[in-house]
Amino acid sequence: MVDLELGGETPAAETDGVWLACVACSETVAPYDDVVYRCPDCGGLLEVRYAEYPTFDDFEGTGVWRYADALPLPTGVSIQEGNTPLYTVPEIEAGVDVADVRVKHEGMNPTGAFKDRGMTVGVKVAERLGVDRLACASTGNTSAALACYGARADTEVLVLLPAGKVAAGKIAQAALHGARILEVDGNFDACLDVVAELADRGEVYLLNSINPFRLEGQKTIGLEILEQSREATGEWPDRIVLPVGNAGNTAALYKCFRELVAAGAMDEAEMPALTGVQAEGAAPMVEAVREGNDEVRRWDDVETRATAIRIGNPVNAPKALPGIRATGGTAVAVSDDEITDAQRSLARDGVGVEPASAASVAGLRKLSERGEIGADEQVVCLTTGHLLKDPDAAAAAGGDTTPVPADADGVLDAL
Ligand code: F0G
Image (cartoon, rainbow, N blue to C red; front, side, top):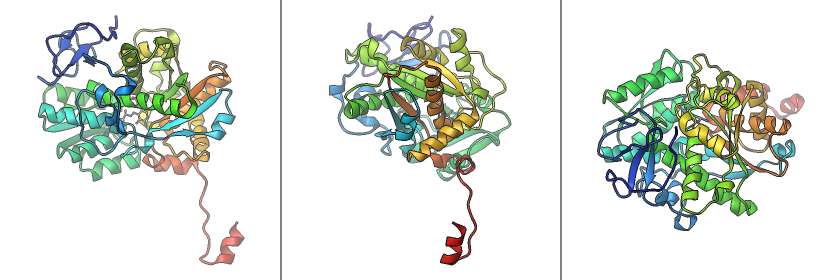
């Protein structure tokens, strides 16, 4: 059973109308008394709950903290994250049979990925808990964001990365922002197993998306998409298509919608259909959705050019699977070549993204081709990371360079 019901009685264990609840057994836990990542009773995933849920009228300002009334703390460790653009993409829209396509480009955050939204909240909670060493396992972007926000908060940061499988831009960020970088002989899932054990031993404070506070910040992607779409088209989107790794964003978007329903600001039928996309070589969520399973089978061997989503054990699946089902969404796997084609198309529309991000557009194309998306639908694709995160993949997908002599005639001859 999964308990994702909001509302009801405020438990005794709360602080300022905020508490943690287990999505498996409904146990409640005080938010800031102890460091806790999973339910102390059953080990289930925890979710942040509130005595009150805000409506759109309660929001003011810009960026993630515009939505402070939907977040556990009034302020964060902030470097102006959020307020990312919602682009039109004429070439991509022309190639699919849907009414409207927009791209929400999360690569336009301070460190070039959506992770900043989670870290502005998570690192502030770490400060409040008084922990002194932050850590994560990462395919790259989480480590870059944690290094940056940890530096801003003047706190030690440790990152565990799968050796040889992290894009150059991301390692450069973690290095320059001063994180201690450990390259693990294993894939991302193995890194997460190790860092979770370090967290259980009290050695580090874990800021992977299993930490429920991070997903609170990532909820604001949904709030921005809804507000920007209504501003641009007069309507909320029918569908949000997003790349899936640990399924943190999928879980966060579903929580965003559930809270709006609880606040009376959205009807259940208006929740955009959450549509997850994975690479064929790392698609355990797609498998679970296709087979109608309640649990996701861990894939031990994963491989894809989209290294950000090279993940075989999506830890947020118990929160995300019900979201895909309840919103009428689905999940689809795309090949690495389809990802690169989508990356090139996005680039031609002026949107530079890393491979994992392009998976969303590749997924939209595939579902549209199969007739699984209605021609009347308004769709938002989430692009999660910036082109410069993975310069090698971008160079490989782009055109070649031409050597020329240093004179105008020589340049014209070469054209
Ligand atoms: N896109 C990008 C660019 C990512 O970096 C990630 C996850 C995802 C999509 C998947 O998001 O986990 O919420 O389903 N990157 C993590 C990291 C694992 O370590 O940077 P999810």
